[in-house]
Length: 192
Ligand code: HEC
Image (cartoon, rainbow, N blue to C red):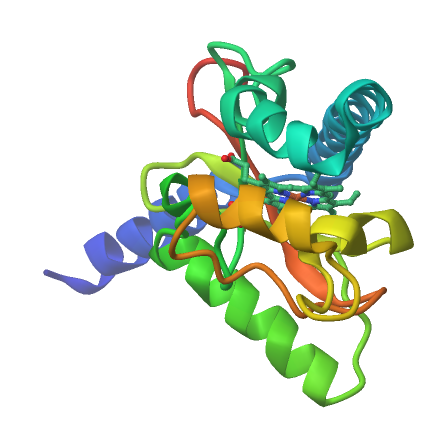
């Protein structure tokens, strides 16, 4: 390649990479859309769960979670957006993390060790889809089913958990612990 060709290709490359670069306001919009979808999903899950606990008690609410949690998590999902909850300590193996999710969980666990702040994360994959992650922290009421299995989870609740989830690992947590993450995928070419 001669010198002028080289300069032209250099110019082209920089023009292309400039136009492909995401504007910061795109990230802000994705984050705020992600936040509002996660808040809505969390409210739906929490309110429906509280209603089930009120009606059937904790052991009864375990069967309710078993059949309803997955579809409730998808209440606000669409053709353009998928919504998932996952964790490093699973109750339902169907919620297992993929490699990207595993990386995010490990990064959050490291931040906790380093006393860092757990912030939401926006990532782009090789196919061009954006991914939004947020930590799920445990509240006091969650400990009825995810807390210390000898002192916090009642025996009849624990029995109901083991019946549905014999390999359960999602217990012995304390309030404020990282229970897992939300993962929203904004599928490329569908909404951008
Ligand atoms: C009535 C008992 C109960 C309560 C209370 C409860 N959970 Fe769960 N949780 C479950 C069950 C059962 C599952 C498995 C659901 C499924 O089969 O998809 C689960 C699954 C999860 C998962 C998905 C990952 C996994 O391990 O499968 C997360 C995250 C989670 N719970 C967080 C919370 C948080 C945060 C709270 C409090 C706001 C909470 N849970 C309160 C019973 C409970």
